[in-house]
Image 1 (cartoon, helix red, strand yellow):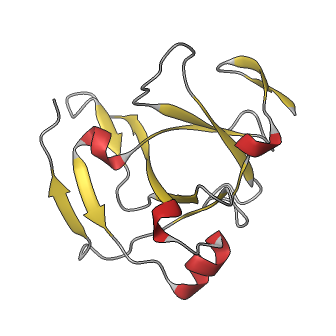
Image 2 (cartoon, rainbow, N blue to C red):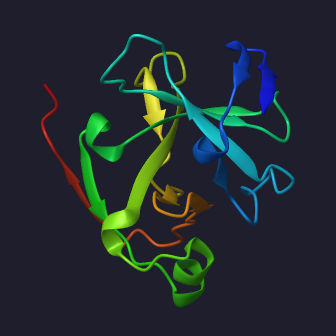
Length: 143
């Protein structure tokens, strides 16, 4: 499948690189198919672009929690596990949507209250909305 992203131009996306978000993302419910892109030649990228295939104008910058110095845990409901078709917890990967901070604040902000969870085996994902602050969050030193 070929798409034309306003950020990276024309991209050919193979079927095995498509991540399906069956319910879309909150505010972007019609956006259900995405792929992860990163700069070419970067073997250890810290930031990725979650590019929507349904609407190439929609893209999010994402990273893993460890890159921003976070280690946190949250529970998935039975419905979320079923939606992800998650049979093995090791197949779950967590991504955080990041954005530029406000002037005078931190240069980058990560949305830790709404992480993306992707089953790497089935390539199905969802956005987990965490409504309570009782989630365990640990800051790690980032070198």
